[in-house]
Length: 143
Image (cartoon, rainbow, N blue to C red; front, top):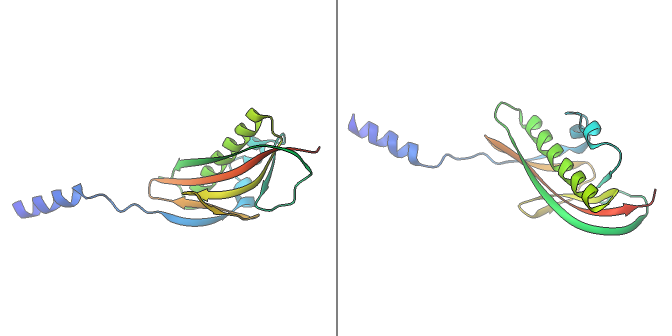
């Protein structure tokens, strides 16, 4: 019995193997849930990867954001879409703070590894937390 108790104690003290599933998620799908389009509004325009943009009048700055969300009780898709929306809202807030009306060259940047796509973003889904990291340029676009 003592051996069983000691074995259980030792097992409990070992770190749990955390899941970290890399997922490629559709950008359009994330924009269609959680009132993402309404919450992001129309004042700042977003362009992913090498999407064609209106004329760039000036580049203001570049920045990145890494956003996490609680994934407990959520499907991987739900958690990733929430993390994506949080990251996009962070980009919008930064754009507004620097006077940009456009965020261009948006790429996934999980653990500083860039992945560029016009249609997908990278999300890492775990047992407890899911995360999305984005990097972008903040610009003044011609109206």
